[in-house]
Amino acid sequence: MRTTRIELEGDHGSVAIERKAGSATIRIDSIIRDPGKEKAWMTWELSATASEDELFRIAEIVQRRCDGATGTNSMVHDYFREMQRFQS
Image 1 (spheres, rainbow, N blue to C red):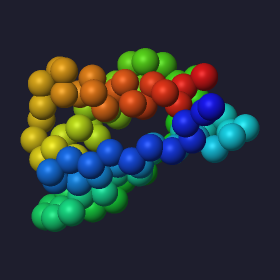
Image 2: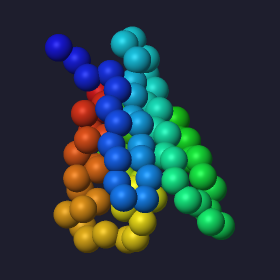
Image 3: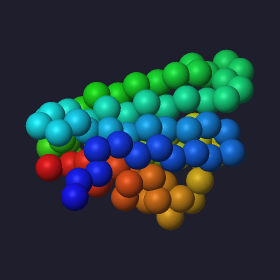
Image 4: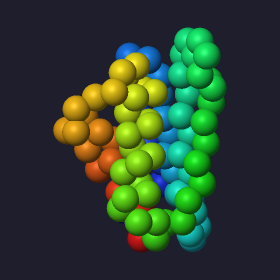
């Protein structure tokens, strides 16, 4: 069994993380419900072999966008762990 797509939702927005079978690319789409001055939609496409540091930086942004505020390190790690599922 293999996870190819996962969607996570917070109070402020949601994120979809996917990697199609045979693809070397992870796609991350983040959407904010009420964006105000922020971009409503952000997308990242990165290599499935991206570094842990690069993936964690994206997880920090995604956590803030989904939850509506900068969270604790453990809150960021919740998103980061889900993104790690898609690494090679």
